[in-house]
Length: 292
Ligand SMILES: *Cc1c(COP(=O)(O)O)cnc(C)c1O
Image (cartoon, rainbow, N blue to C red; front, top):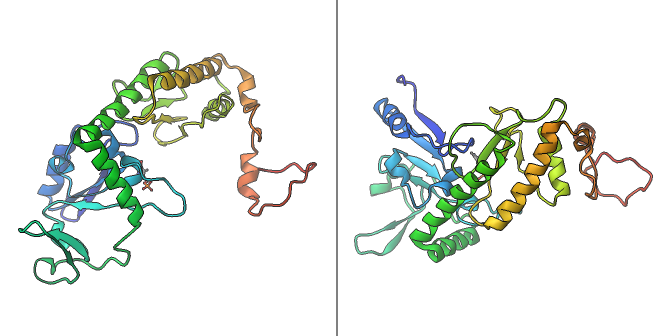
């Protein structure tokens, strides 16, 4: 924390599903050094309604509407969301922006004048993906503060339920409770069986595999984020499937290496797919062995 440190970026909870409990100390250190604290809001769904980022010492945080407030992922560019600022950084917010006056009325600020003369620039895409904001606002209003808080609590409860069940066979990456996602390493697997084999076998069970080999700090990582929306029955069905495969992986069942057996496309030659990607669809050639 020398003079040349302008700021830090931290994700909390982080990608290992852990809450950084020293976050206040970290924020104080950066502030004492004259710097600012940027928080990646990617995992806000684990703490929304329970924690105010400002209380953690955050100066700027983006809100991933598609992660916390129900808007769609991907789909050609609806990714869009607000960045929230502390009082220290608010004067630098780019224009145009909207302020609420003392009369309770909202006002569109178009010019970097007066209170807004420190604005660092102008946003070309001010309106963003308007439909995303409407949808996120509808989600927020329909849940209310208590509903948002419960969504966060249920997401964390569901992840811990999965962690508790799967650790009967699988190796949790960290001791203790997790936040909204449960992380496992491949340490429980027999030699010659890997995370990819478990993931492919899950396709045969009708499940889209979990996030694999990420985060990189955990060997053969399997990151499971159930969210708040799954019922206990569905969590149990999923855990039963994963546990059955995990037992086979622990026992060194070689057949796992050929999975999936029941998917339209079987095990891919991923190296060939990466080196010789087929970028244009052509009518299938039944005899050809295709990389995809
Ligand atoms: C999802 C995620 C991102 C990427 O955010 P997008 O808005 O989905 O591109 C960045 N960091 C972390 C920790 C994430 O979980």
